[in-house]
Image 1 (spheres, rainbow, N blue to C red):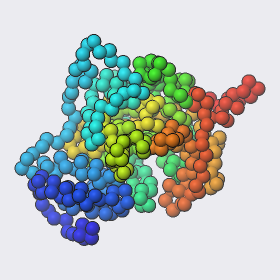
Image 2 (cartoon, protein in one colour; image 1 turned 45 degrees about the horizontal axis):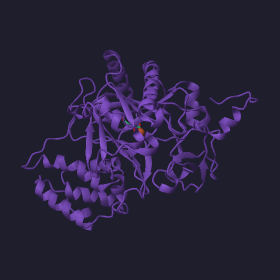
Image 3 (cartoon, rainbow, N blue to C red; image 1 turned 90 degrees about the horizontal axis):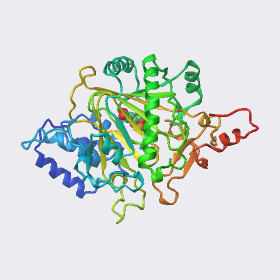
Image 4 (cartoon, rainbow, N blue to C red; image 1 turned 90 degrees about the vertical axis):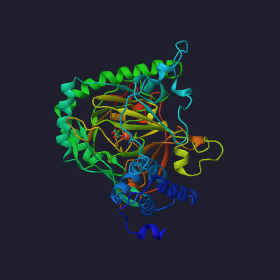
Length: 453
Ligand SMILES: O=C(O)CCC(=O)C(=O)O
Ligand SMILES: [Fe+2]
């Protein structure tokens, strides 16, 4: 491995076959991805792709959860551009709806619960049409969501805001790393701003830069709300078993009161596979996500439980994660993606690094994304369980262990703050059918004078 670390970066344009030879060697050596340090992983990638900066390779690694294999998959086509056998770089294209290929007689009323995976291990299916996205992913999409001038004005306003966005830092493999894109959090009022700075923890730390929703963002929020509620109703009616809402899903209207704004400056900026935090949203949360500027690929993959992937083919985390392949949803300017109630608990999502992008007339190579969220009063940290560090805990859902899959737990997250150890506090989380925690149900009793929501 030292050879990888100490070798000088050669200025070469390798042929695709030389790269493939190296890939085979790495494969036969069965690089222990999950155990290797980040430095070693960057060194492996640098040896395969010597014309790429190590900073870029580190960002890329982070964006794919530290998977060397996935990084190689992403880089292979761009490396091959330099080879004699040119391949065209991936870009946003046009595809006929998959549903249009189906027989008319086959009634298409898919239920997310019994959908057979469309993809296989290691493959990516690209979806563009709203029908396909609703039928084969836990999301739905509304294209051309805002009147064009309003979308352009919002984009301009947020591009200006984004010049002062920072990058979140977090712990990965015991190293402190920075998120490979910039972001900022917006709330409705000065009071909320103050509360967020002192009461709400994210990965064990308070956010420093909390801003107030701009008037443009507020006005868009009031357009997002009815559309998301309509999409939720459609989803329940057409896709859930017996046309009923999911267990723990709230039957109350979705009311956006906060937004994370993400800025991706160029194709190399991305966000790795993750689920959004449910701590302040509650179980089965819905998120409305508006895309502006350059079109990018939003990838979704199902979380496969440890003993769900048959023949013991998934010993390595990255192999298990990829057991059913992934779906790339193309997000053009002015599209609203609704992540439905099954999304955060059962799937992971990412914004994939792009080898090539088609510049946007206003944003150039930048993409802005606004994720509108509903922070529920009953999930305010003043009510949620505290760990032994005395800190409000984080809500997680068991996703991989089959025995407890779908159960929720409150856990200490102080250890995620750089420099902190944290305690090992853990408590199962209980909710009623509608996703209300016990303290909200108690407060709702007829004699109570205060209700939480
Ligand atoms: O940029 C996007 O579309 C997704 C952002 C995201 O996943 C997040 O903010 O949690
Ligand atoms: Fe997310």
